[in-house]
Image 1 (tube, protein in one colour):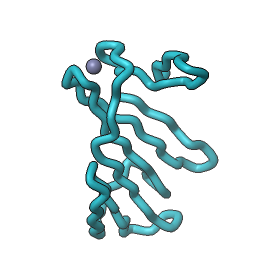
Image 2 (spheres, rainbow, N blue to C red):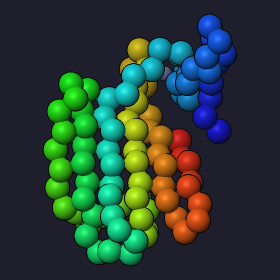
Image 3 (cartoon, rainbow, N blue to C red):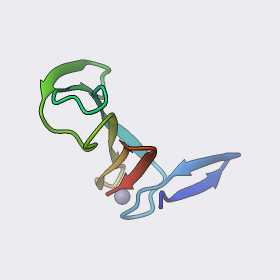
Image 4 (cartoon, helix red, strand yellow):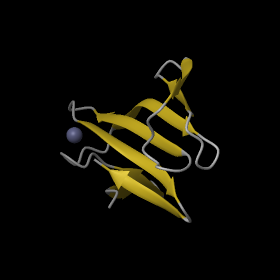
Length: 95
Ligand SMILES: [Zn+2]
């Protein structure tokens, strides 16, 4: 379950480790793949907006697309959130 805190009419994600409401997206990683293709294109966006892409053979999804958000809180905790397509489901993980 994604921890949130309701503040100023918005649901704000909080750090799952310490509860801090000041969290930051560090990197966004998109794994793009046509259904069941062997090669995946991984595109990574860093905090400055720069991106890099490369073909790879691994992917959080065994069949399709996935997106991984790497986050931190202002107390230094690091955590990930991912959205992984699997068959008809979009699986949400938070580590
Ligand atoms: Zn934290």
